[in-house]
Length: 282
Image (cartoon, rainbow, N blue to C red; front, side, top):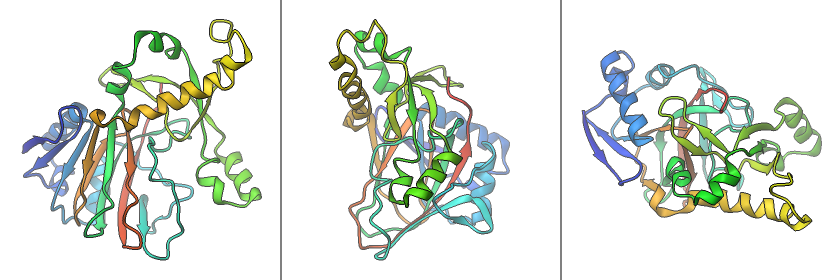
C-alpha cells in the first residue's frame, strides 16, 4: 500500500489497495484504519467492486444505518443512493459544510462513498479538518466555547421542503439532538469543533458569565455560532477531491466536515454511501 498525502493538513490517497480484499484481510484493514486516523479522509481510484463488497468493507468499521429521507438501495438498506440528474429537485443539502447525521443522538462515525457516475467536470467534494479548526482558535474563544452545548436539527434542513404535517412528524421522530460544541475524538483524544449547518443554537450560553445585556445573547450567541461554523470554509483546513467512476472516499465523520460542490447541473451524478453508526459525542 502506497500513501500519498494530498495536503499538509488533511487527506491522503491510497494506491495499490483493493477494498474488496481489505474487507477480508485483517492486517490490511488495520493499516487502513490507522491511516484514516492519521489523515481523516482517504481516497482511492479504480475500485471496480460490487455493492456487496462496498457494504462488507464499511461494515468492518461498524453497523450501517439507513437514512430517513434519502433513498437506499433496496437490497442493501445501509447503502444510501445519492442520485442527481436533470430532473432532480434543486436540493441544497449537500452544498453546505456539514457533519453527517449530527441530528441523531449518535451521529455517524464515518462513511464510505463511491462514485458510480459523475460529470466530466464539476461535482467535486471537499472535506475540512475540524480538529485543526479548533486548535487554531484563540484561547479566549476556547474558554467560552469549551463548556457549551448546541442543538442539531433535521427539521430545518431535510424537513424544510416538506409539508408542515410531514415536517412536524419528522421532528417528532427525530427530536433535535444536543451535543457538545467541542467534542473529544474517542480514539485520538483530539478536541474537535463540532458545529455545522445542522446546528441551530447554543443551549447553555445565556449565563451571567456570557450575557451582560440582551445583545450579548441575541445576536451575540448567533454571531459566535456563525463564526464557528464558518471555520470549515478556511482553505488551509481543506482537501478537494475530483471524482471519477469507481473512486472512493472514506472519512472520519467525528473530526471532519464536508461540502459537495453543486456546479454540475444538469449533468448526472450518482453516488452511493455506506454510513457507519457512531457513538454519543462527549
